Image 1 (cartoon, rainbow, N blue to C red):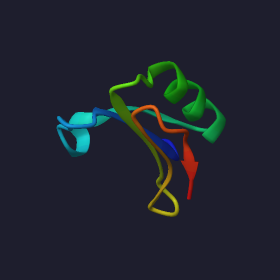
Image 2 (spheres, rainbow, N blue to C red; image 1 turned 90 degrees about the vertical axis):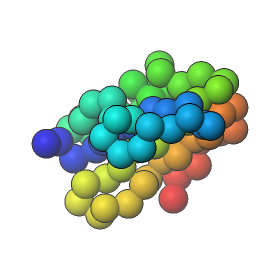
Image 3 (cartoon, rainbow, N blue to C red; image 1 turned 180 degrees about the horizontal axis):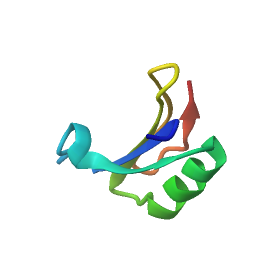
Amino acid sequence: MKRYLLFKFATYYASGGWCDFVNDFETLEAAQAERIKLHDAYGSTQIVDTLTKQIIISQYESFPAEAR
C-alpha cells in the first residue's frame, strides 16, 4: 500500500471505511490532483497519511480543503 489514501463519500450517505476508499498514491500531490478531479458539490473527500495515521486533507461539500 502506498503512503496516501484517498476516500470519497456522499456527505449524508457515507458507506464507511474501505467502501469509501478510492485509491492509494505515492505522493500527496498525486492524491490531491485526483481528489480535485473527483470532488463535487454534494460529496466529501479525505486524504489519509498512512505514516502519521492522520487525515491531512479533508473537504466537505463546497467548502475549501483544509490541511490539518
